[in-house]
Length: 180
Image (cartoon, rainbow, N blue to C red; front, side, top):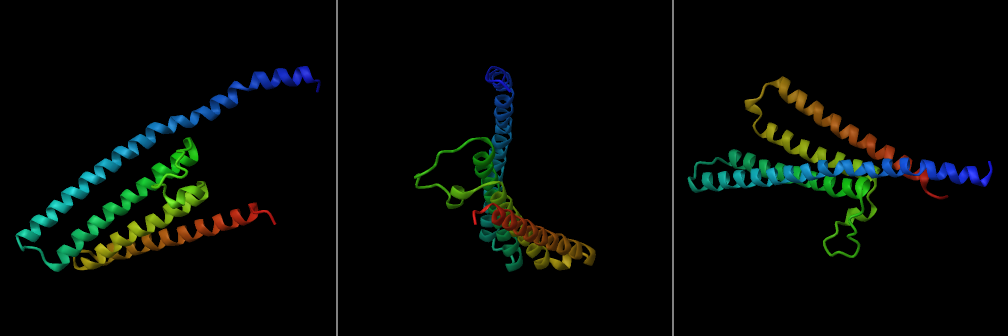
């Protein structure tokens, strides 16, 4: 191919890759929506905390009820942590650099985040959230039938196996891309 024709094709195709690359900004409203969802979870946390304090002040709370409310608070925090990982990690990986290098509050994991690492972190966070839900169910097992207990356990086991498969796949992919 002669140089003149190659230059013409490069100039002609340049806008298309540029538009494709710029399309990543279409995700920005999605991440902003997740930030709003984070605010909803903060509100939910405070409602549950006030409920806990009110019940403790009335001395009407059993140990089991206390444990269930505290597990609910932990659940909200873990979901909130999951949101932070998705918002910060997803933005950094798919939209634009946050330029947090040397910032004292930069999350340690952000320096080596990529799509694979993010998937593994999300999968393990989902296992943590599922574990809290399963623990809440087991603490209150008398309120559930055997079928519900079995299904919740099977779903949790599925999450665990999926996370192991994702982590193993990421390990294989990472090893394949490492220089020997």
